[in-house]
Image (cartoon, rainbow, N blue to C red; front, side, top):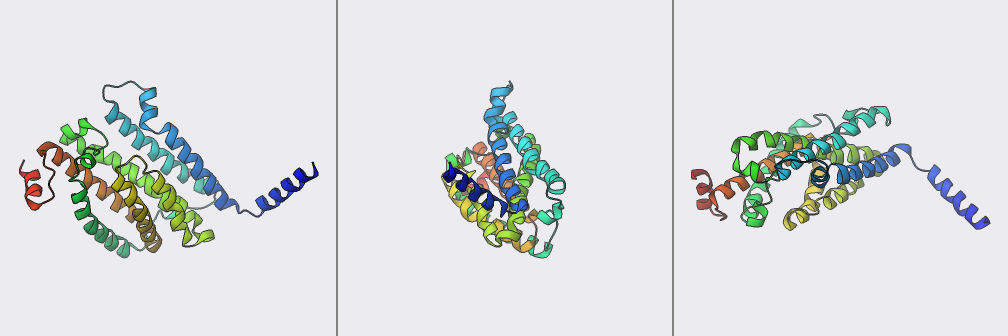
Length: 255
């Protein structure tokens, strides 16, 4: 009994050394991620609702629900619990010159690699994640990408804003590595090349957000990449052209 009291006393002393802000951020990120995995998923939508197109509507639900959990909830917690402002967590323009220049550079570098990756039929068939309904209806693709934008805004704010900037003061540059780990893990189930690339992507976007003092430019890069992947995948699907040469690129648009 004395041994148990000693252990509990030591534990309590250790807990008292923790700072509230960082502890709350770690716990809230875990809780929100749990809610996202279990209640904002396509699987939850399929189990709960009945619809004629599970893939399309479940994807829109996923994007909207995660948009609420990862964007709106932290935006409420920041002033209410953490007594801060969204700007303190990267929700600002920051160094817009660096942000815009680096975004254009990242996009220009990534597009050729994405073009090559989309030549893999299994990769191209994964996107758009809204399924056949989006692939078959170009007009639907446009407003579908707005939901993608909402999701990307929430996703980037949650990891590169709320988590990274929230931990920046305590952990310094290590906050970039901390946010990269769950970012990478949550790419599980995506094509292998995308999952592996998310390690480097998470670090690069973290550095960009850190340097620009804003997560907004990470959002612009991520959204632009997703639009490109979705559009190219749709065009490949319609033309059934999966080459990576210039002739294949021309064929996508002429068809």
